[in-house]
Figure 1 (spheres, rainbow, N blue to C red):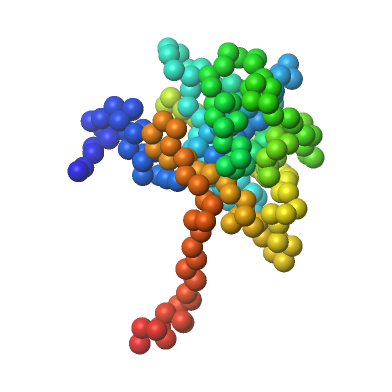
Figure 2: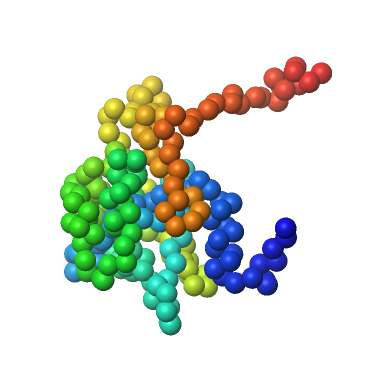
Amino acid sequence: MLFDLSKVTAHQTYNLLIGLVAPRPIAWITSVDLAGKLNAAPFSAYNYVGVDPPIIAVGVGNRPGPGVVGKDTAQNIRNTREFVINVVTEALAEAMVTTAIDFPPGVNELDIAGLKTAPSAVVSVPRIAAAPASLECREIATIEIGNSRVILGQVVAIHVNDEFIDPAGPYVRAEELHAIGRMNGLGGYVRTRDAFFHIPRTTYAEWLRANP
């Protein structure tokens, strides 16, 4: 079936994209407003897009309704230029979903979810203490496109619990982290526990030897 996106609604396009661009990592973002009030919310239009410098991108839609009004997270990042991305694991899934509720502005979602924070090392925004890993970020640019925006952030510090680090790399022991990903549909998620498989990378020379 072919879908010409010039002939379907934005909601239909959304339904198709979230079913095909999956699984998606979850950026569980903590940010603060100009008054210093803490906000937490998850976003799954998220990935890293560079390593030198280390850059992540997060897509954040505007609030529904008339006018162009950014969500609290987007407004906070635009105003303070700092935020933290916290990794979501199976153990934190329910708390993450609680912070996704559309609470009124100024409500501390982490208090409602029963989560504590810990100070960050470089940015002023705190991280979620229970998260096994966090990325401290500074905004580089926010690009407004239609009814959404893309936030580009430079990662300035990374926290990872010791048990999830192999010092030889250092590498992240992702098989033991048990992060979750976002799928399509309301409440659709995927586990990474016992889901890893490995296919060795092949060089061109190795491929030639195997395919004379």
